[in-house]
Image (cartoon, rainbow, N blue to C red; front, side, top):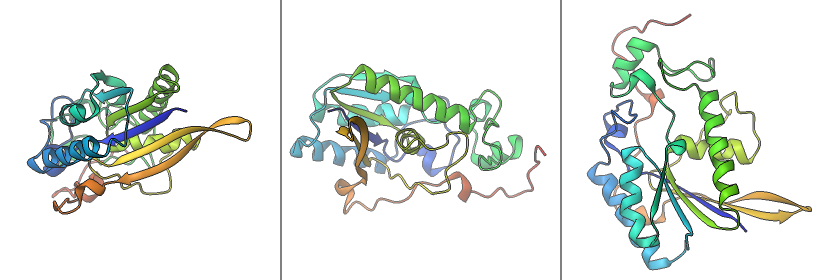
Amino acid sequence: MTHLYLIRHGESVANVKPIVAGMKGDVGLTERGIEQAKRLRDRLATSGEIKADVLISSTLPRARQTAEIIQPALGIPIIFDDEVQELKVGEADGMTNQEAWARFGVPDFDRYPLRPLAPGGESWGDFTLRVSRALTRITSEYEGKTIVIVCHGGVIDCSFIHFFRMPSLVVPPIDFHTRNTSITWWERVNRRHQQLWRLNTYNDIAHLQGIGAVESVRWEDTHPAAPIPTEE
């Protein structure tokens, strides 16, 4: 059977500021994020619950740093993969949310799923297609293995769309709440004379008990101080 573990990165500086963070704006983890990743490393080293054959990480600094912290507990080298990055933000990279929304408009993927976040960036449709292709490629290449991917909340959201075969050109009418350093565990099983994906675990953060984990700031919870031009 193929086992796929998706681990969200620890709390990042961009989560807290908040900053629209691609490769330019991402300066890595906060002190809390480092502690979260260390807690996960210690949990995995002690429990041995994930016997990984493959460790893949997004190339964005917040995921790379998380993967480097937990890697000793898994004992295998990290394979860095651009295709499991968070949604690409284009020209908004490095701006505060308010600066980006003032310049490019507030992201509204519910109404405009095919509109990029900013010039040079991805739309929701672009993003879900990229992640689906990456998950198909990785799980095919490492079929029968235990795969760990250190990635992002958006990538984990897209795993539900991909494995449940949900429409990918519209934002799902549900709200995912994927926590920093949480574990999501998918398993491929034989059922009804075919291979199906089964969700065993979502948002497992047992290792974070007692360290005062807080929520990341989300795009929809930031409000610019001045009216924002629209693209209507």
